[in-house]
Image (cartoon, rainbow, N blue to C red; front, top):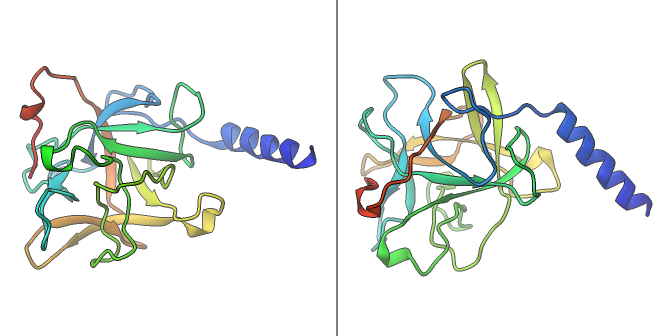
Length: 200
């Protein structure tokens, strides 16, 4: 009983102290809403999308688009509790809403494989789903940062996500302490033809 009360107290404290995440229009980020993740400042490339790297036969690696004009691929951002909005510091799932046919039988949710070869590259296509491993934190008045939390029970395990350029010139989204990729969230308008969603 005491454990349940302590857990509830911690949740209420976190709820009270967390900031509401806002999109580029100043609206609150909806739990389960669909958004583009864009760089917070101009001149820093485009939104996040997918590409093939190394020996991958399907686009499974999350990268930043080179073109500043590209919004990238839309993602769904959600958190397990039945709450209407997303707040900073909460564990969230991030998943692309459409993926290439070659990966469609697997999860489109983000994860970081244990054998990732570049500072912990963010991927899709895991056979199992890894829930609540990411967080959104306020980085400045105009920007947020994404974090990866391998242990959902410990804030100390969370690490920044940043951009690393590999030998193929891909701008991979990776675990990168101390140099976060600063982002904003732009609401995505659903379209009828999923093939029009861009992939790098």
